[in-house]
Image (tube, rainbow, N blue to C red):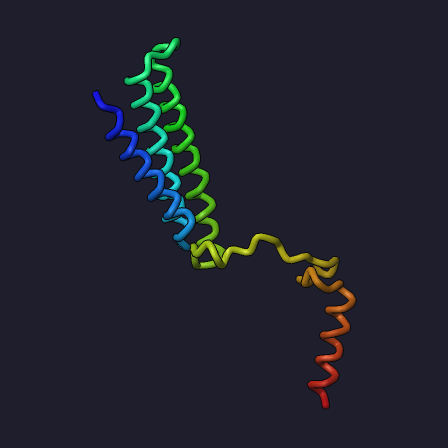
Length: 133
């Protein structure tokens, strides 16, 4: 068996997965691209196991099974996060996801991280005074 064809196929699959991760904005499509990359790794592991005589028999196939288990766990956790994001934001666009939580002062109001709670309170008092004029 010539291992060139599976290796080239795996490289193309992995490249397509990398392109999908870097280019896509939808979180579900990013997860699909990650799965494509993991399947490319599985193809390389199984091909290497059949072509290279290793000290441990069937070690590539065992590693491929571990990758499959890892992929199943990743999809379970990833889809749970995406569904929760959709419930909160009504969108699964990766660019719109805030990476930090807004700070909350003791009164329970949201505070911008650039300013303190007193700055926000003074600004709202000034806005109310100008609205009364």
